[in-house]
Image (cartoon, rainbow, N blue to C red):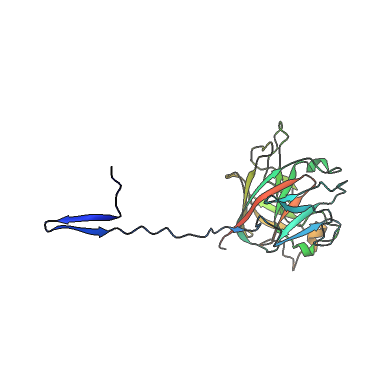
Length: 265
């Protein structure tokens, strides 16, 4: 069959004439509404806080970018010595959906606590990096706990932990420090996608690989926690906004996507 020409013949009772066909226009390029917090090249827009160090001081290069991923590394640690670390995005957020892809790799740092094996976290509604004390282990925040399996036993991920905070579930105050999600166990070194939907002081939801696994309401400061006490203003405990940070708890972990979708209040 002969190839179609860009010129078509239009025929009528009076004869035929040539009609030039217009090439269709390319569809417009629509920018993604998701905002990349990690640019895949460097730590621009992030602040590092290591326990025992001043803000921005990371002498053993715990947090670094290699091969396009943000890594928490412990290859330069002779002993962990309780040096928990967090890397904070510079902007506070209130209503948004956060998407993070992570995986655990390698061996835990010598001296890391047993509970911290294949353990990291995404901290939301957190205090500012500047307000953390020199020897403070964790920012006052809501922690979406990230855990990896041991190849045999059940161990959920995207759990809830509450350093200096409390939440409500079904209208009741929950003061338990950590609560398991409904997620399946993720064994091995596969990349895992976790999304966190944060709607100010109303509700927070966790998702693992697209499946909902946890929901709670009314995040708030814990007045019995010494670090949280310093953040209470005029007796108001409710958390409506705060920082986003990623955690280093002695086991190497990689993050290859950290992005946020702003939501209207």
